Image (tube, rainbow over the protein chains, first blue to last red):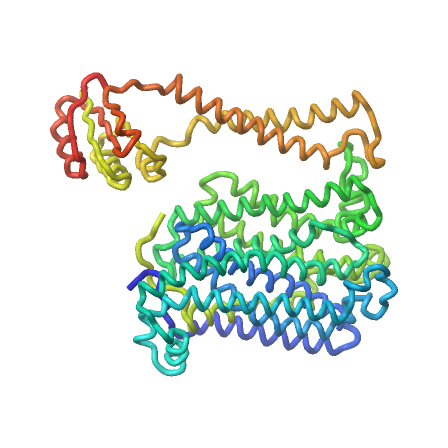
Length: 436
Length: 168
């Protein structure tokens, strides 16, 4: 049996119960808050923050897998099946988008006041926005399902013989017209590589569109040509980090025992390190021109997050600490430190990349950093710093934010576990040769 | 002191032979490979390359020069751009970064040439043109009493040819 074989088995009870409870409590609380006049806006803000994080992360996971296939990468071994499994959340994000849409008037001021987006009405049109975002998500979900179907079909050679019941019939359906394992693998490889190229382009378009609509749409006067790429890349980088975390967590479990070798940890570390630099590069490319140009349409978005002087523009430190205490600045800097400063400086050497505790901690902090970063992309556009100075209550760690985030976390990992373990059981139970 | 050369045709077998020899206590080894191979490099266990010191020095010099040059130029010919101070952090970060890469890269190449051409140059009698073609070589420097044992280990590791080298 090939080492890359799906092994359907039962859902692991303890994690399933924990994630199930988190999902029920989180989304139950969201529904209660979304229905109340007092907390509705805050609940939808937290929902949007998490939607931006988890939907892009899920799709980014599949893009990592597609990228490995496109570049004919042999280093990953079973790691690309972890990345595949993140994408189980992709179809769910369509449903969550519809939930998000129910709170659109709490988020997008211009929907009730079209006069606020003069000259941009053609783009900021309620119906047009709904259609293009939904189309983006549905198109990506369609491509993702097709890719996963083709990619995983040859791995079901053994499972189609042994699995019975409902799962068995699903696998039989999935593998109808079976050509034999070797022929299936050749065909899958050829088709998936073509699909991977289409998906890479589609991801760039779809998640740029979602970034424009769901983040830039909150501050529709802001102009940025770099932000869509920055948002889409953030989704990819957070998926790489989460893949590294999951690979390390499962390294000693029955699925991947002996498979997460030192060489593979080194490769994962290199990816987190290098892609975090590119993320920072995109940010800096935009920050620099906005800082220099000093045009009001551009500076507002950055000033709301990094302070009125954009933190620091000279070699003199005068007033630096006062600027740090402006609203949102500390949260923004924390996200920046977690997503770039720590991954860059800690993973600079070879040894930290190969050390599970170091790589796992840095990658976990990176995912957490992206959760904070999504908060900072959403909240200051809706509750500006002036409102915070006048007493508006905002915190990334409020009860509403934490519970809604717990709901997303639970649902995401339930989907992951179902796909990786139950159907189709994407993760091989025991690996074959541990390649370098 | 004697030198024994083993000729192999496969990088994995070469790495395996090196590991076996090192395991048997023969650590004074050299190898020839027509391709760069991490596996052989790891088996040789030579430790980190000294070239990286050159890279670090180049990067530090580059980033320092990048900032110093731009600050000096700004104050030497002061023009206010976009209402910003003459010397500012954000734009000069780019110059600092680019010169960091440039100097780091250039000094890496120079360091590589220096170490490869002058410091570590070995005109070994063991070298043969096929080691730049389709064969791998493993040279073991050992005591005269160990020659037989080394030859045996090399043959067991899959060497197609084993011989004692003169003048290595």
